[in-house]
Length: 388
Ligand SMILES: *Cc1c(COP(=O)(O)O)cnc(C)c1O
Image 1 (cartoon, rainbow, N blue to C red):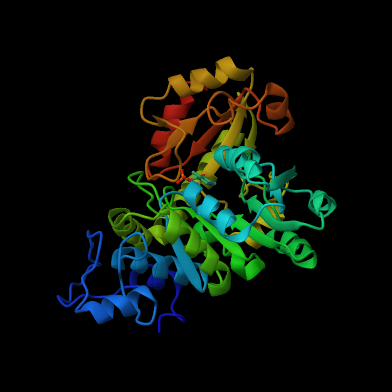
Image 2 (cartoon, rainbow, N blue to C red; image 1 turned 135 degrees about the vertical axis):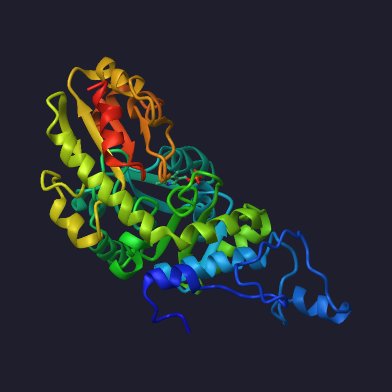
């Protein structure tokens, strides 16, 4: 019914199911289990002969509303909600991979995702090759007969590199692998990876979907066929989204379009202003013509998004001075919040990799990442100007 609606309408209307009380706003069902009319109904539910809720590790009405709403926005057949973004990636891999399989992943992905591939999945016989986010030839060259999954994140964190989803999807398809895209930075408001040929979408709902820094959650989206083993893993092992968090996310999604547009508008103006500052050596933002993949970004995403990185002259001391001179911005590694956050990647999110690996990834000691919030632009500028 809601399939033909525009995204802002889907964000408000998709997935809503009213209870016997006809509530207008989506209800929060805090119950671990559900009661059956009789023994026969219980038996039918358990063997799947009759649809319906059994236990909240399997399904919960509030969580189901969230899943349907996000699926509608991404244009996916099915969404599986999870306890966090990391458990979304874990559930997708555990559901779709087995010992002996090989993964090709962008080297510019979230740090815990690198750890998951390098340390956790490796123990279970899944090997990963890391390649450049932007050089498609490396993806092709890394393919082995047992390659089952391509994994990328675009724009990347913190340098906002853009991976060409359509081109990498074609390479994956050609060798019989699935392409998973972590769509956390753009959300379906700015980028719809399934339409570009991706098979699976990953979300950390913790970021823009909540948008107000309150709770953790995640999601895996794709075809019914691909989501069946992912849901099977979740149902058995339990990294399920809590009903309370799903209710927070349902409300967050309602303003997602407004927020993404406002984050993007603020970020673009801040990036343009940073480019003018004498102590700033370089600004990384896909919406700037100076970004090496500006044309691809404009084709693939609606706007440049809310994340801006910039390099100050004179390295770490200068970067720390900018951060420590702020009075309003939140010094925290989280992102996707209405409140602007500022972080020094080299000593926080990317501190545990070697200095050589950091240099190879382009993360210099002078680099600062800002997740631009919804405060007045002039107040963000003044807060940064003190240290610049
Ligand atoms: C934060 C983040 C994750 C992990 O999400 P959690 O909800 O913290 O588990 C995964 N991918 C990206 C791009 C992220 O920013």
